[in-house]
Length: 188
Image (cartoon, rainbow, N blue to C red; front, side):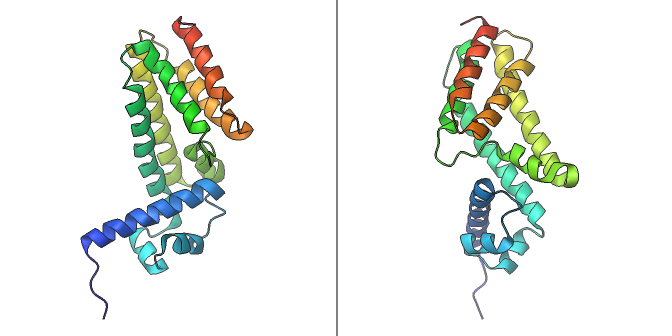
């Protein structure tokens, strides 16, 4: 009889599962990845995987939720190193440019998930909307601290840069959006 699984082993297994699923879903797309591929990449048996997440949809939501915390945390850490409020807003686009230039950049995981599921999965749609709302709120905080009241144009430029960079494979949209925001801020 196998030894019981400890809480620490469960935590490690869950992390390995989420790491494997996130890498596969981001690289190939959610619909293109079967649970056997997740099993093989994570090294966990399907029974164990389904013990963590009863459905693939639940796994997708968990992957997106965890990625949101890490992604927005990384962005905030970079932007908040800058003291000048207007430069903080512009630093958002510097961070995006670096992300766009990373090997394996495939665009926004939430836009990609929405593109695959649309409104067919209420749980995925809710997670996508929560991420977008949180990202836009994050931007709004920086824009308001810079003395502007309209954060929507900055958020739209960030979102547009993300989508355009993913489609073109070129990080230039971040620089172009940064220049447009500099004009909005009056710092061009």
